[in-house]
Image (tube, rainbow, N blue to C red; front, side, top):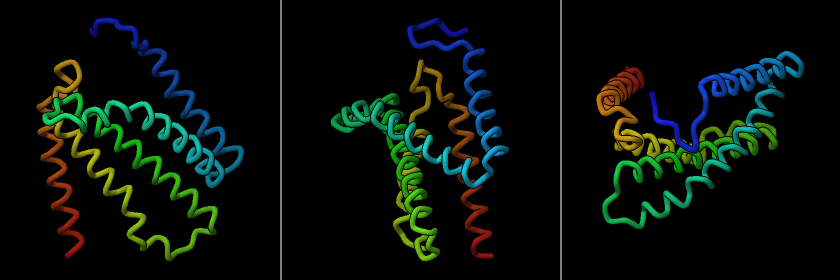
Length: 162
């Protein structure tokens, strides 16, 4: 059991949050349909991603000023970049929709920017085993995740060229 701190959350509360968001999605999907529900959840995700990026900005900025970064700092940079990428991707998706979903936009390198930033973010997540409390993310599972990532990449490349 984890030692309680000032930022704890009961499992029951966490499950209620998960249930409430899932129920809201399903309810909206039933009432207004898939397209409108996705649009509203795009707005919600964009807003939350902006808030999370702001929350991690100072820690990421301070980490980047250090010569040597510890696991927590590397993870903070990864988290900041992940939320920036998500916010940017959602904003780009909304702009695409507002402009009539032009097909030529899909082949622009512009759309790859959040993918590249997400690649950086996940790399930093995987470079920070045991960064939180000396055990999260667990070093064994980070190594396992790296093996899975390598395998998935090899399969993806093989399928692309087959």
